[in-house]
Image 1: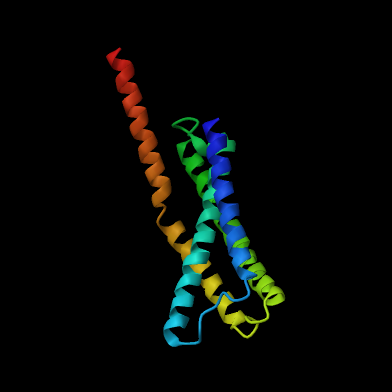
Image 2 (image 1 turned 90 degrees about the horizontal axis):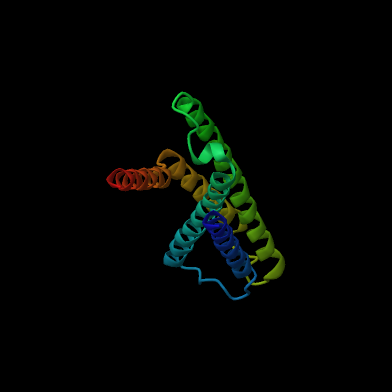
Length: 172
């Protein structure tokens, strides 16, 4: 039950954030003036926004697969440990590619909705904003793939809980 609740929480927060991104794309007067500092703020905001979109999609996919595919959640045996690690690496790579594609499609949908629904923001740099969004997604993907801190932290916590559980059983 806890696994299902966490999976629903992951997807719910991801979809809510994506909805907010797409909603703000349709707001008419949601823009800054054309000054250099505002342009830098806009670029930094877009990088942060689409990095978060990528990370949320990636987290949701990882959570879903960890809770539904048994081979991803634990090793079957010590003999198959290397095969399981290779399997996990292949799955993580595929999830990364799917997350990049989904985030890029959301960025394109964002710019398309902005173009269709707002008159005042049509003069904005649509192509430049899209390139900044895609660059942010790729940068986040490189960081997530090269430094799997979250996965290692989850494994360390799980290992610690298993040790505590074994110690309690031995004391009894």
